[in-house]
Length: 244
Image (cartoon, rainbow, N blue to C red; front, side, top):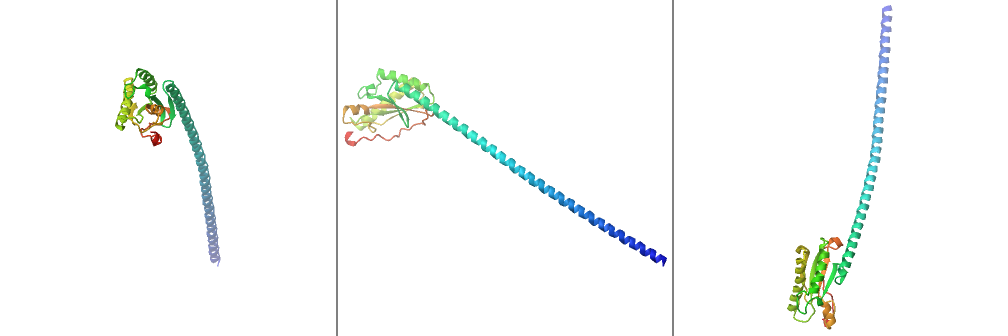
């Protein structure tokens, strides 16, 4: 009986030890689960904080880029306005210089320099000495500004045949162009065209009007004075048919 009691006590002790071990294991499992949950929470919080910091950094970067773009745009606009002002200033200067030699006016095509009919002999295209002197001065102005180009356009009144007037306008335009080239103006910056009697600026019914229509015009253009290359396809000035 004593041996049986001793065995029972040993079994009871083993059961208590096993129960204690199970409790210890359960407690350890709970602790590990808690630590894992805490670690996951810490990771999630760190990820959230990083995402928030990244978002703030991205916003700051975008704000900096926007500010830089704005400054660049403002600088570009100031540069554009300055360039335009400089071109206008140069345009005004050249117009005044040309106008001191020959009548010069503003137009969308550029500066229009007018060579009146009195600079040629009647019905001729030979340049008079006085005309050559004036054109030499114009050449000097053009040569001083390499970005300029000229289109020489010849016009006549309505007296005479259409073929005669067309040919005369071309001959006068080419005579002026050739003289400019002789004075050093590059051919690539020059062109010449005759319009005959197709673009009157006054009535052809009287001598005064016909004299105004007999002319050679120099169209001075170029980006340096804020005018792109002009074209010679301008529409004729409208003058009533009965006055031509």
